[in-house]
Image (cartoon, rainbow, N blue to C red; front, side, top):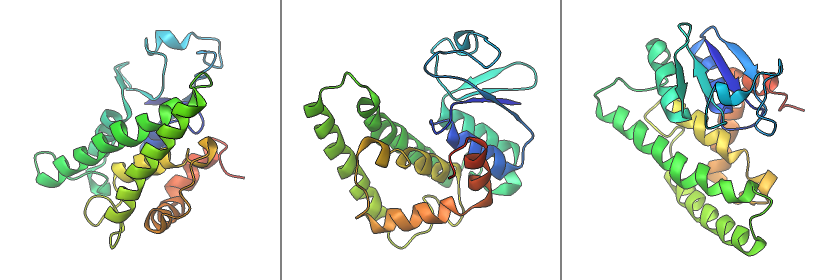
Length: 202
């Protein structure tokens, strides 16, 4: 398998999951600015939409969209308990969290990364994001993980997107449950390995 990624982008989530699952893969750096691979290949030939992550299977089949990719990876290593079994209520709960993170948190950051977004709109976007994260902080009270008793692919995704807060000037230091949750995830060897590989550790 190949994972097309950009350092610190949302592709960190499947990168973490690949390490957690112990699957053999080749990381391929893709610039989201030049849309080129290191060998000069046009990244649009890999993903016509031009963004990461992309998971390329050994037969050449490609999967797009992080929430789909991480569930596929989890299902390749069911003994790792990275996702509940298909067809069970906990699996639908996992999908609920993946959808929430994707639509309410991940996309909430998007205008904050765009230089042409008006500052007054960025202020509103930060406030909206903070409101979602405050709710999430309450949900994390008294629990270690988002789904059940195990670290799951949803935790990898939430960790990845909340990493962006400081970069865009969003102060989440007062969210104590979220902070403790993030520390638990950051300490995991697979998370350390993925972040090290992407040059994100100082």
